[in-house]
Image (cartoon, helix red, strand yellow):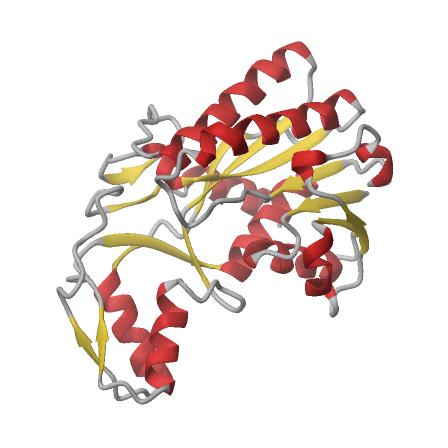
Length: 281
């Protein structure tokens, strides 16, 4: 089996490629020319082009993969930017449609928990989505477009709806890298929100394992939550990181307001992902 990965040099992409290598799966990394140096320690074939300006023979250049794991998406972490549906959405659909028309049989796409919008509590795949920002809206529209495309040109589609991730290689603007930097610089206080919001966090290594397992199944799975299913307060999570790392930094709770694009308490239902992962093992 041959598996191609877009967004290969990103936070998730590098871990997905490492997981494919661990399972001895032939992999092809699709990267923009400016980011090719991010794959120095991973054995894979590399194809360079920007999916926004992908050549007409892109599928051939990628070696006719059996599966495409599609992680690429630009414009983050600005969830409110109109770029997501004005530029990113049409470019993404155009690229993926060309892949299907060229012969791709199985497509796994990274979705987002922000497609659920401001709904609280345990969120399951069967719930109606209510995206409340441009990023969540654009992702859900891409899913809808692919469902319509599937009816016209059948292929196997898995929409991996990701929740919150942490781990090695995380963007410096994320919570843990900010905390680590402040602690290593000797700061006495770490500014954050009140920290009482409940979130669903899963390590990026576990996320990569799940994504690869779903991809290698080569099934028409549809929407599936990729998450821990365990709600934890952001304050408790950060306090755990401080204790585990032996830092002396203290939390300045309430310094920042709570984000207005997500509810105070939500997490993913894991019933569907558990059944597929158990089946795969």
